[in-house]
Length: 313
Ligand code: 3HC
Image (cartoon, rainbow, N blue to C red; front, side, top):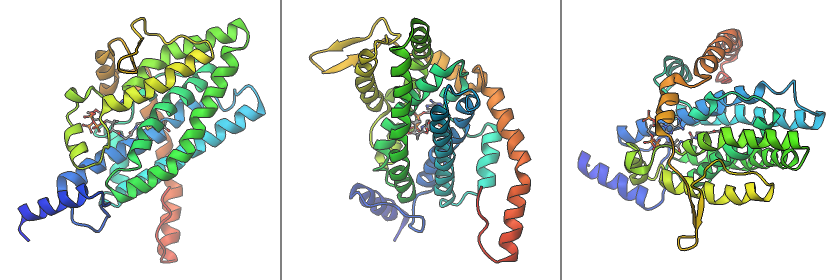
């Protein structure tokens, strides 16, 4: 089959809602697009453990500490599922980590902000995981099989993450005036970075057209952002928190909320590496990756001696 027919046959297969599996032929651009998106997704899961990890020892109760520990452990597992999915496309874990450390690969800008108090842990669960699960529910139908199956597993756990965050915010928002003020300050600082998680507007998004054509993405950035806004604004109202957007209004005709402009200069500044915590996050990851080298070496040595596949950590 000549290459034009192969591309045509590939697109017809995609359009028939079939899943592409690792051993299937695929255009290099499709492979590379998936490697970038899946690996950046994995990096986001792992780096995202840092801002929350800062609060394990300062959780306000044993119950809160257990929930936070479970959530952070989940995130690590999500990263491993996604790294494994990326590796089925012919890239090694070492290459993926090297791309993160060199800055060649990104992770979600939202994790470059500091967690100043316990309300931030609630805002991350409610808003950041809420945004992530809105995106990930759509990604369950992504065309690449290993990615789609990882999403099925991750979405179940992500929904728990969103609910535990909302529970923290609800308790604080309806607590003492000081607690309410902390919850309002947290939503003021995390609302817009959470909206930026969905990426640039579709007409400014260089990857969306191929992403949609190959059914890697099943909805555009703006549609997913709108789903998140429409779901989250009423949740804020129920617990008496104000969305930090003076231009927010409900449009009865479209049945959607309208928001003010997103600060894309801030978005690009943080994505470029100039956010409040970018260098701290990367230094931390590099340090502990180096500290953990002996575990990887021991696993590889064991695998070599017992002729098994090395356990990936
Ligand atoms: N932070 C950092 N980079 C971002 C970004 C953000 N908030 N939004 C977009 N970008 C990057 C894109 O990755 C892309 O980079 P690249 O060209 O170097 O690959 C570039 O900006 C242009 O953006 P596009 O919209 O054109 O790119 P995509 O079509 O890939 O859409 C996306 C961006 C919606 C993030 C898409 O990549 C996606 O759905 N990724 C999978 C989900 C994901 O990674 N979510 C991040 C958070 S996961 C998480 O938070 C875990 C949870 O447990 C909290």
